[in-house]
Length: 392
Image (cartoon, rainbow, N blue to C red):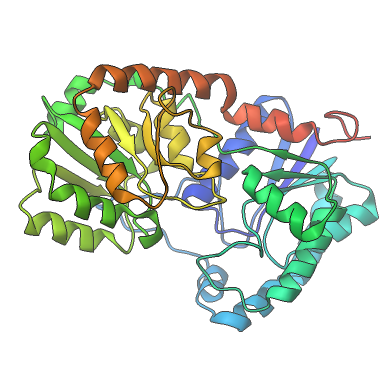
């Protein structure tokens, strides 16, 4: 089948991982997949860089658009429908797609409208919505919701990343197109613990004879890493063998590093910063278990799946999308969301139970192998076609 994957993102970091995961899985199933990206974006090329490498330059349009304030930014998002009409018309002529798969973006309706006119099936993947609290405030909220409701009713099918997302949409917009819930996934060719010499890696990184609890992700305030570090730093003497490895970058990283240095914990709390995506698995290979201090009501944390794929179970908050993936005590451990002290307690308790960490970690990997590879997601989205995977 000829599939056109369309998106209006920069295609970097987690967005790029998700796009590549779905595209490669569909190609692995024998489909021809072409990607139509935001101008200047190239999600099929991994952009993550190490701290020693210069950051890649962004396209001029991407730089201008992402810096626009408030309402002006949203009017530009609306105007992008005109760009989409021109680019999609050209893509239809050149590629003759039999299915369009689009990563949904606010205010973008042109693709759904064109697909309906031409009778081409279109599946929307819902990772964002006018219904949820977003990092960037939404000003034209009423208009955004009207457009969103129309798109969710008039496409062929919907892929939601969590049940919470689907329930919110159903309550707000009524009857929707047929849908599936498809959380994130992991690439087992990359996230495979057998690829790594764990003993050597731990020795090279100063973690020999340590019990290692790790975290991978963006150091944004709402991820709660700074509160976790602040709480556990005062109690690390209760677990003398415990070391923390916090991989990632973000606005809160300088604050966290200052906190660690001020407490004299630099030898027990490693913060390597952002590492290329192809190197993340080597850091996870050093971990005995991991922690996700906070999340949100609707998201499906990508790193949760990659950690589990490496046989590293996670202490995580009990938001619904997380509980859809983690079974407490079987494939991970849950704590009441928002209660950082409970999170810290569980992390400290597990230092005395490394056998449990490895047992639960093995079960977590088994779950990913069975149900949460990118091929599972690709197979699931194709069930939304009227003929069960082949366009009419």
